[in-house]
Length: 277
Image (cartoon, rainbow, N blue to C red; front, side, top):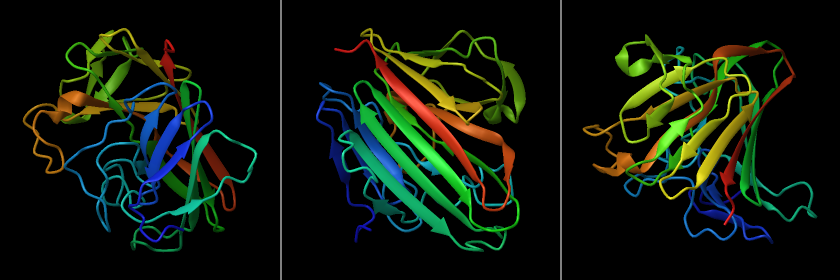
C-alpha cells in the first residue's frame, strides 16, 4: 500500500503503452497508446485529491450506487477514499498494468449493511485499454448494488462527435428524467446527461476531426451514460470552458444487481484507438 494514496502510480509496457493512476479512489488517471504524447483520458487541472475529495477526470469508480438512484450519497463512497495498490499476480506479464483493491466492512454509512471487496485491474497493450472491475460479496446476505466506470474521454474541439447510440431510447436526467431518442451523432461539447439501458453489444465511437477514432465496448455493464455539464456549469473543480475538452461515456449497471453471499460479479470496459499511428 502506498503511503500517499494521491501519489502517481505509473506503468509502461515494452510496446510503449503507458498507464497512470493512484490509490485514492482506485483511480486510473491516464492512458497513452504506443507512440502517443497525449493521454486519451481527460484530467481536470483545477481538481483536488484527498480524504473526501472525488478526483475530477480519468476513470472514477462508482459503487455501490450510481448517481442518486438509491439512499446513499451521489455515486457511492469508494471514489473518494484510499484503496490499496497491489502487484500483478503474474510477474511475467510485462504489459502496462495497475491493480487496486478495496475492502469495506459493514457500515461505512448506516444505510450500507454489507461487506464487499472490489478489485480494479487496468491493462494497456498495443492500442487498447482494458479496465476490469470485480465485486465480491464477502458477507452472507444478498447484496444489491449499481456501479459504473465514470470515464472522461479527452476530445479535440470543435468537431468531435459520438456515434453508435443513434435511434436508441434514453432517459435525460438533465430534463427531469424525460425519455429521448438519441441522434445518430452527438456533439461532445454540449450539455447532456443521458442514460441508455440494455445496450447489448453496442459500440460507442468517438470520432475526432483529425481522423482518429476511439471505440468503447463493455461486458457486464449493460448500460451507458453520456454526460457533459455544458457551458455555464457551476462545478468548482472544472475551469470555465474546459468542459469542451472531454465527454464522459460511462459503462454502467443502472438496474440493481443482487449478488448472493460470497459470490462475485465482473464488468469489463475496453477502449481501442483506431487507426494506429
